[in-house]
Amino acid sequence: MYIDGRWVDSGDSATLEVLNPANQEVLALIPKASREDARRAIDAAFEARERASKLAAHERSRILLKVASLLEQNSREMAVLIARNVGKPLVDAEAETARAVLTLTFAGEEAKRIYGQTIPLDAHPIPAGNENRLGFTIREPVGVVGAISPFNFPLNLLMHKVAPAIAAGNTVVAKPPSDGPLPGLMAAKLFEEAGLPNGFLNVVVGPGEVVGDEIVTSDKVNAISFTGDSETGRQISEKAARTNKKVILELGGHNPMIVLDDADVGAAVSSAVASTFGYSGQVCTATRRIILSEGVRGKFLAHFEESVNKLRVGNPLERTTNVGPIINRRGLEKIERLVEDATARGAVAKTGGARLVSGEYSRGNFYAPTVLDKVDKGMEIASKEIFGPVAAIMKVTREEDFADAANSTVYGLQASIFTSNLARGIKLAKKVKAGAVLINDRTNLRWDNAPFGGVKMSGMGREGVSLAVTELTDLKFIVVNLGES
Image (cartoon, rainbow, N blue to C red):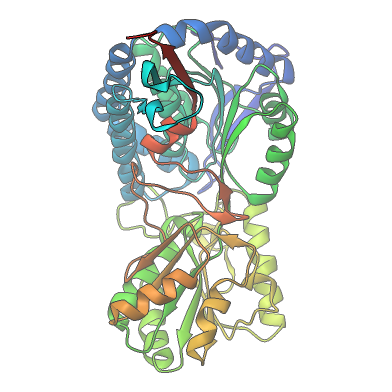
């Protein structure tokens, strides 16, 4: 663990095995943090918060840009670590590492432009004398930020929490995922090498119900930035409210792709393959439901099945691999249960539909890329986030029903619409309840300094580096009475 600028063991010497999900190889034994360890990390961040708030913006910027440079220099090692630790295909792990460099760079730049604004008080007739008053706002760091990140982007999503928090002048207690902690720990080493002062970043790994709970409930922590499943996010929101913490919640998604009868089917198929099966579907923005109009159904399915059958499932470290393993057995069993429920209720597996268990797959957590046709809204898979390489195909016949089909879950993260009629697409996009709607593009796209977040059970607040900096600061209004002129 990294606490107050030192690498330390857990107070009770407990350890956590870190596994490679492709073959169950033990990659590392790391300290398994206890509640007391989490308190030590929180105390270190709390004690350092005044020093952090006084560190000049240009110094915060310099450190963040130095971390970005160090990460770029070590990008190959980091990408391989991501691939081995969470089973992400190497090409995708390299892309994640490159994005994290950008995230850190954006944060370094944002540190220098945390602006307030002047307020024209003389526009107010009451109280008298406003022509002699000057009003302006400044933004101040909230204090200690708890950063809790998931396994699927173990580096970049952690940087989306840590980098804006530090840019804003906060200190951080970070909890990387127990299933994928190694990239976050390597990132902490880079912050240390870049000269981040002691206590500004503290990293502990352990069970959410222990370490995460301590971070969320501590009255020394002022804000929580969490990415993970919706139920955990709901619990965090309830607990954080007891101490009036700020929260940024990036939660689950059950993202629809709508393909209208005037769509470019080839483009829709390519996007559906990439956004459904990228990183084995273990992405909150992945396409879960493909809602087809009757006019394109046959052509789309024929091309889609053909493309899915060409996907290469295998070792994440091989560049020819398109789909790697599921992160753990629990996730694999959830996929199996949801697919079995759907097929028992009338869905048809056009491809896949089962765990891969023979040959090179025998020791890993592999599930075959699956296309489930004839899915209806009464099936669990039509409403529950599966987090696996499964496409649920649904049909809509009436124009007015597309939005209702898209909005039929408790989620509202991202959605996509394929149509050659832009006006038609925009009208439909306005009816879809989601944080983002992409027209003629994939659901699983994100730009690291653009607004990102969901509605309904998909989240609260927005990420995107500049917005996260704003979320992790408090607005203060200052008024100066200049006296009689």
